Length: 428
Image 1 (cartoon, rainbow, N blue to C red):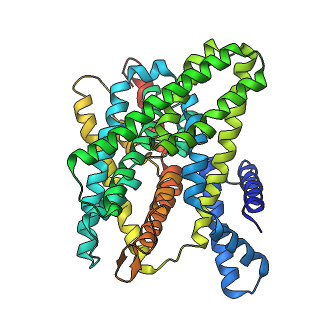
Image 2 (cartoon, rainbow, N blue to C red):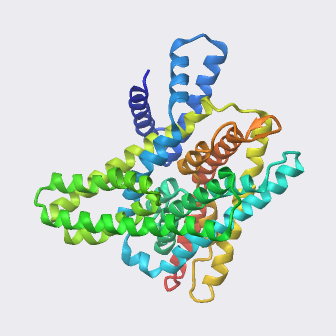
Image 3 (cartoon, one colour):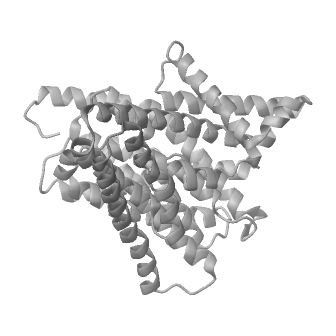
C-alpha cells in the first residue's frame, strides 16, 4: 500500500471514529481520535505478534514508510497554523498582547531550560550520561503547546474570554517561537562547531524576525490580490497559496515558516476578511478553512496514535518517558506561574488562569515532528539511539497530554465559569 492510499484510508478511519464518538463515548473529537488510534495500534501489534496476517503487516509497513517529520513540519503545519490564526480576534488579542508575547517567548524559553536541566539531572541519576545540550534540545521540542484539543473544549464550555484568548494566542505564537528555539539548539548540537552568543542570537533573530516580516509581506500581497478580485474561487485559492507556496518559500530562504503563517493568518482573518471579501465570500472562506482545519487535525491525531506501531520501545525508555511527564508539567507550571506573578501586579486575572494554562497546555504533533527530525545514529546512550530515545519519550508525554490532560481539563474550566458567574464584575 503506497503512502497516498494509506493516508486516504486513515482519513476515512479518523472520520468514522469522530462520527461514532458522537453517539458512544461523546469525548472531544481530538481525544476520541487519538484514543481510538492508540487502541488500533495495540490491536495491530497484537495481531502481528501472534498471527501471520498480510493485511496487518501491510498497515505496519505503511506506517513505518511515512516520513512524519516531512509530512507535518513541511506540509500540514503551515495549514494548521494559518487556519488557527484566521480565528484570532485581533481586538481581543491587542488587549492581552503583552501577556501573550511574554508567555509565547519567555515562558517557552524558561520551560526549555527547566526541562533541559531536570532532564539532565534525572537521566544522570539513573545512569544515562546524556550531554546537557541534548537535554536542552528535548526541552525545546516539548515546551511549545498545542491548542487544538483544549481550544475546542474551552470554546464548547464558553470559558472566560481572556483565558480563551491567552490559550489560543500563546499556543499559536509559541509553536513558531518553539520551532525557532529548537532549530537554534539543533544547529549548535549537530553542527560540530563551537557555539557563540552572537552566532546563536543572529540565528534566532534571523529566523524569528524574518518569519514575522515575511508573513506580513505575504499577507499584504494576498490582501491586494483579493481586493482586486471578484471571483470567490480565486479569492480562496489566493489564501491557499499562503500555507503552500508561502510556507515552502519561507523554509527555502531559511526563516520561520510557522511564524509567517501565524502573522499572515491574523492579518487575513482580521483585515482582509472585513475589507477584501464580500459578505458571501466571508462565509465561504470561513467554511472552507474550518473544513480543512478539521480534516487535517483528524488525520494528524490518528497518525500520532498509530506511531506506537513502529516505535522500537524498551521498558527503560518507557520509564524515562513516564518520568518526563511530571517534569514537563512542573516546567510549564513554573514558566507560566512566574510570569503571572508579574502580570498580577498590573491587572486582575481569573484565579484559575495558571491551572488552566498549565493543565491545558497540551503537547501534540509539532513536538513529535521535531523529535522525528533528529538524525539517527549520531549519538548512542546506554546502547540506545538518541533519536529513538527522544521519539519514544516525546510520544509518551504527548499521548498522556492529549488523552489524560485533555479529558480532565473541563472541571477546572467549569470551576472558573461558576466562580466568574458569582462575581460578575470580576475581570476574567
